[in-house]
Length: 173
Length: 143
Image 1 (spheres, rainbow over the protein chains, first blue to last red):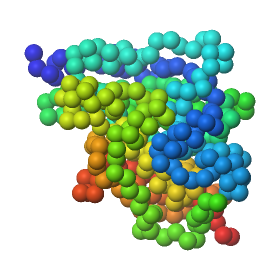
Image 2: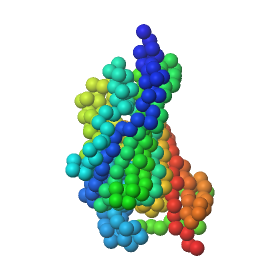
Image 3: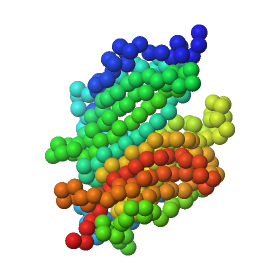
Image 4: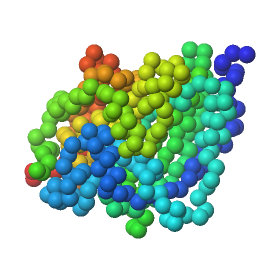
């Protein structure tokens, strides 16, 4: 059996996950974590460390570097703040799990952020993820599987949108 | 020390932001792993990376995007980015000499917002592109 057949996913399995939620997360954005992240991405702007520098720049708080929304779900996710009806199954796993069992690599193909306002230290944000696309493409006789997940972050107290993160994941043999 | 302010009137098509450069170290990747919560061993565990057929550990794509993001906010000001999109073209490797390249591709006014469009890239000193994308920032106007 060649690679193409081994890695083909039935169209209905792909289309079935489109629109499915990947989970809801409530995140507390913490200043210490922002400072560590700013240092890690070599963001040397004093406004990411110093509240008076931020205020001089006209910012209402310590802002997060632009790619922080990608990782903020890894920190400050306190159990007592999570909603009880958060979905537990990840629909991405339904497609990518069986593919990974046959080998290959999962790659981060593309990433996009749209910001309605900056993320600030002290924010409590709600992230709601969903699969927005899933498809396969043939390339050089091999099947590549694409899954696109969008996470919409909003301010928990006002409900106002803050940032949308769109991640394109590729499985390649 | 306050940050440098970029005004809409002072920007023209083809302008380039100051280049940020970095010789990528394994320590950079370990620091990013901890600060991002991404503990994929391919980025910090040389033994596992080699066992998986890689020549060494390699950089997180999001580290590349994050470093490029720092060069963007250095130019347009923290908190001013409205959109930032990239495609991850190639892996980055320890000891590579990485450079940002940010070029103004357009200016426009939408409602009250003064917007600047940017072509944003991260490449190594040999010119091999690692991350290719675009960004839009809202900047203050003098008027």
